Image (cartoon, rainbow, N blue to C red; front, side, top):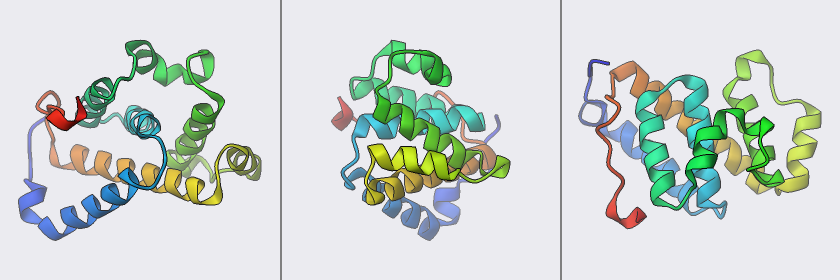
Length: 154
């Protein structure tokens, strides 16, 4: 991929606003490991190599196992994810693939069995955030392989 626009310099207010959402999500109470799974899975669906590189590195730095990272695209076929994680992944996949139909009432009810209303809202905002970052990275040519996790993740 060829870099196109340095969007952080070109539209710094928009980037700051997006980072505001990220700051909210990092403190909302949902598990960090769950957020990393969500970021990886949505990035897989959207085909965003830059975000996949970033979030697999962040997940590893936070202690995620290689086995779970490698099998995330087939999570529904593995025993490696908890029921809570599986429910969150099903929810964010539907939010990511919204053009194929909104989340069904059945999926919402299943999600509510595992998550509070606020947590469902936070899961949805997490999907919105990573889907937005995927679209930014793909549109403006972020190059995969250039990201290194912050030392604070270790």
